Image 1: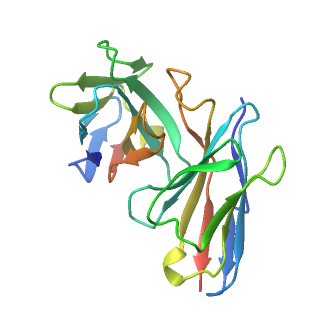
Image 2 (image 1 turned 120 degrees about the horizontal axis):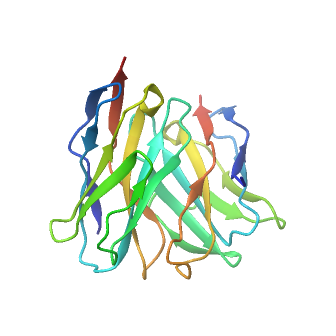
Length: 115
Length: 117
């Protein structure tokens, strides 16, 4: 079974600084999707960024970018110019392409942003 | 921008009672999901639904749970006889197509907080 591991229960960053959240996963598949979701205190799940495993280029969305290392099965999220509104729980998630569409989530990382 | 909606936002029920959680997926989406998140824990998959039938379900989704798409817009999760351990946040999600789109992404609703007393 696929597993997703987020080894950092909690991270802190100063406003305007850069922070990287780690995620590793385990799979025997060669094609899959990876996602980062943000969950603010309201507990709504908001898609931050997605990466298709067949693409070598790292995905970027404004201040958010990923470092996708397929061989290492690593998928870290970099947040640049951190803002107070970035404070939230961040979940890394994996999804197979061919066999079912469920998302498998990591345990999450709480990100605190200091002003 | 289209979004997934869920009602109610908070449901309080007595143990043993039936509850129905409601979701309205994004209108052109074909694939629907339920996930749950017990407080302080990770988000867990419950069930996926496509073409009016369950596509996949987890071990959590036992006989006490059922899903239905009663009309063209709603997608419901029913818990027949609630237990204390069913207390959690329940998220509905929808996606455009089951793997046909290379960027098939699940969009989540705001969740329903279920409290079983």
